[in-house]
Amino acid sequence: MALIVQKYGGTSVGDAERIKRVAERIVAAVRAGDQVCVVVSAMGHSTDELVSLAAQVSEEPNPRELDMLLTSGERISMALLSMVISDLGYEAISLTGSQAGIVTDTTHGKARILEVKGDRVRQALAANKIAIVAGFQGVSTAYDVTTLGRGGSDTTAVALAAALGADRCEIYTDVDGVYTADPRIVPSARKLHAVSYEEMLEMAASGAGVLMLRSVEYARNHGVVLHVRSSFGYEDGTWIKEEDERMERAIISGVAHDISEAKVVIQNVPDTPGIAARVFRPLADEGFNIDMIVQNVSAEGRTDISFTMPTDDLRRAKPVLDEIAASVGAEGVARDPDIAKISLVGAGMKTHPGVAADMFDALSDAGINIEIISTSSIRVSCVIRAFEVERAVKAIHDRFKLTEESIIREQHPATATGQLRAINARET
Ligand code: ADP
Ligand code: ASP
Ligand code: MG
Image (cartoon, rainbow, N blue to C red; front, side, top):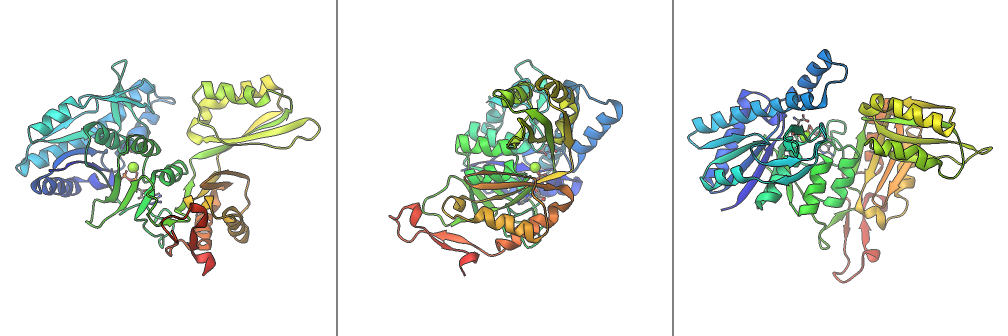
């Protein structure tokens, strides 16, 4: 008998019919002899609707109350799912994040899980019940209801799988796996059979919204193997796990894009020691996530400092940025939300020079201007204009022929990574 955690996303439980179909899937697993703990998201776009409702009554909703509101979405789906399962003749119990013992810090809106107690989940499973846990939520150390950030049900599922020592963690969604690009933008994108934690972390951090970044971090830290698959079919999806030295690896895993960030430029700053610290310390202290920092070479002792940050944070960051600009003697601050970040991710980059140059070529051939570049050992990211993002994703996907399989095979089990032979589109 295996213990499985199954997570169903918003589209998968989008209406009454879909909830019934999900219930049948869960019951089928139980009938096959498995113990099942289910994590559900709110139905369809209901979290978005609750966010917009809050915006209609308040310019800046109180964070505690916003969390109280948003967690109601998952309560609805978990209770409905539990009712259907009972009607099918199986025992189920729905539990809020707090009842499931998901303890978080006190950061409303993006709380981090500190501990998963899981007592009531274990009791339910021991009594042969199906435990249905509300995703995306927990209870803080100050006993308030918290949410884990958008897409947070993925993290709930992984955290429960780790705490329960589950045999499998299945993420059921509206696509049948992780693709080489968002299949909504590139219909010819290819489904990846297996992706390492390292690559999935870079993909998720670069905007591939199929898994929440924190869920992948949690899975890697606790060794939880993830299987991302469709809730509408039965085919195998994508496995996310530790890189296996013997497994065939893609040079490039995929292209990800992100339109949720904005570019900020602190203009004409005196280029003196300590300036970067004076710019970024106050932003860090306020908890803003800063990415892609660029400081230009100075001309006449002055320079621009550019970086990206979530567009949603721009409003809250305004007074902090204005204060920084004044204190360092900058000319001003420019904020530009109309940008996109486009990233190419692949573990094979470590051993294949020229990937970045090919990416820049693809953008240049498409007439797309690059504003900022940043790299890690397995990722190259460029900031471009937001309106060009779909064209950019397609151009890069085409240039690297990602629709075709491109794999690295080890010549001999004993050879080092430096001697890998590339069988990819660029060599054929
Ligand atoms: P859920 O509600 O099930 O959590 P999400 O909307 O959060 O579903 O995630 C699934 C969506 O992620 C897909 O519909 C797809 O458009 C998007 N997506 C973005 N990048 C990728 C990718 N590389 N592979 C698969 N899906 C992706
Ligand atoms: N319902 C939440 C959201 O829309 C959490 C989730 O679906 O994972 O972000
Ligand atoms: Mg999601």
